[in-house]
Image (tube, rainbow, N blue to C red; front, side, top):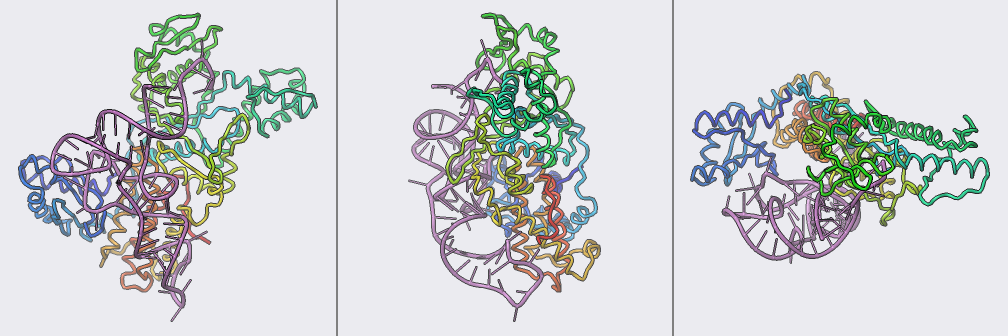
Length: 534
RNA sequence: GCGUCCGUAGCUCAGCUGGAUAGAGCAUCGCCCUUCUAAGGCGAGGGUCUCAGGUUCGAAUCCUGACGGGCGCACCA
């Protein structure tokens, strides 16, 4: 069981109070106080008890602080205007630290299977910077989830059916006609531009020129799709993203007739189309699933896809969608209900749009016009680590604003450098010290100052930070934590000399724990902590 | 118009299961390298938490209503 420090302490305090009083404390919630002098932990439960007990919070706090301070792992517990501020004993901190150094964080299996679907960008062009948020966010969710003991499979839904595929085929063919066959062609307004279209055209022509000459659009589209998908996979592999499954939309349609039978009670015909009564669930209007010409709509594909997903029997399904799809949630959830599945198992995370600026001005991207910024382009410019970190510094549902020009000049102002720097400094201190790492790890704290115990305590709170971040799907909780931890360390470093200090072993043991937490934290983002900065 | 996300320092954003003096980065201005990595630290200035009501011992946080912005409102994906 992954036992978080604040839980351990809260449990022991609750238990003690239950023993002496009629009131049952389920669990006291401990907070990290704003100021270090308020203690290692603080709790405000006296405020909520005041009404029930008909006593003033201050009175209650005084009474309980006295009891709490008698616990053998507590150094002191003080009542301050209704709060109880708790300081832990050095021996207790030592015990927790040794456990951390020896066992790390070992999460027990949660026996919960999660299917995480993310990115699922249409295979009509390489990934652009707007996709990066979902991509990196999904990767993060997967890492944290696995760390916490969930079993997570990842999946990419490939929209390889419909009009856009026709358009992709046509775009490639037209480019081939223009550039290879030197014919005069007229491009429709909304065709796909970009160099990759020409590359694909060239490839196909080299492989079998007849495909182009005979204008075999179906075949062209088919080849183009798989080539684009390869491009996407290649971009993703560079940031270490790999999927367990790719599911093709096209391949699902073979089962449409059977599926239609299951939901037929919720369907009706009107104007030659088949409608789904999604208003009977939670939607605002009914939706067409099959058009007059017999071609199923995109929703039909999603019905098939979610049927397919739910038949695979996971405990939870997480989809990460772009926020522009939010109107789609009710439709899909309605359909899942009609199929006889529990739609509450589906959690949809909307990642808000990334608004791009260029030199302070709004920068509009359009895939079809070809004026989009590729994720790969930015990755090459600023590197894997910065790309990943930056996209995780904000909640999914915050609108994110990036200035492309600034992003490209990221240097010392980039927080990832700051965090790595702390890690590298610790590494360097350990090299400088006359004591071996083993000596330091085996050392028992002798004389922890308030600053050092504060730093230590914060470093020990890594696991609960990851859990909170995962549960709330808020990656910024971890990036903020790592930044703050690094900041505490840098401060401490500047204020204290480590080597040849009488407290050298104390300081270095704390530092090892800080470095561990930084390392594990960064690994959740697929970033390797640096041992050296130069 | 309806739905949805949001509105906190000059800018980008934390803080939101109600609690101690509302925080950070960037930008601006000072200070700290004969001392372990200055890609660092310390300090200063900068706020009517959009507005108006309500709930309460206590509201940036919860509720209602305005106002302002992004996105969506397809038989496109």
